[in-house]
Image (cartoon, rainbow, N blue to C red):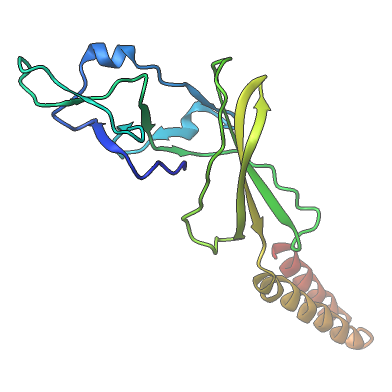
Amino acid sequence: MVQPPTDILDLHKSDDKNDLTLDDKNLMWIPRTVFHNLESGKGLQKTDKLDVLRIIPNSLFEFERSEKTENKNARIFKGSNNGLSYQREFSVKWMCDFDLAWYPFDSQICSFEFYDTGKLVNLVPVYVGYFGPKQLSQHFFKSVSICSKRIENRSGVVVEVYLGRPLFGSILNTFVPTTILVVLSMMIGKFRNDHLEMVIEVNLTILLVLATM
């Protein structure tokens, strides 16, 4: 999420009665961003948060008053001297490839890639933040980074989230029970001469338990 400047004036919200005119909207150019590594279009959904269009005034804060014939007393900022900030919020399901070769001592990197369709547009990464929980179901959040990248021969941005796996849970859920079952299997083997059938049944049960872990 890009941090907007502090000196911003609210110009438009989608539920505001002082909506922009259709002519003003047609004059505005809004970049079209493509979310790259998605499984399908269903993974991209617009949230219920309202879109916000804002004026970013220059340092001199120059503006003109609307004509007296207008029914609204408004401040008019020239587009040549001021900027606009347009914010939209989406819920995205990204595709991430996990390498489990070093499980449970693995660390994973999940990348989020998006680019602009315009050839003359350069996406500039400014800031990215993570505001979710640090402890996840199978991983824990380590850090996040953002950088520029060429995607589909277009100017793009990639966000990388670094995830780690908590070893304490893996030790309690995997290593300790496995060690206990292996030791139990070795101990029950001492009775194979007198109780062979019991030894086979116990080892078969231990094997089935290990397969479910």
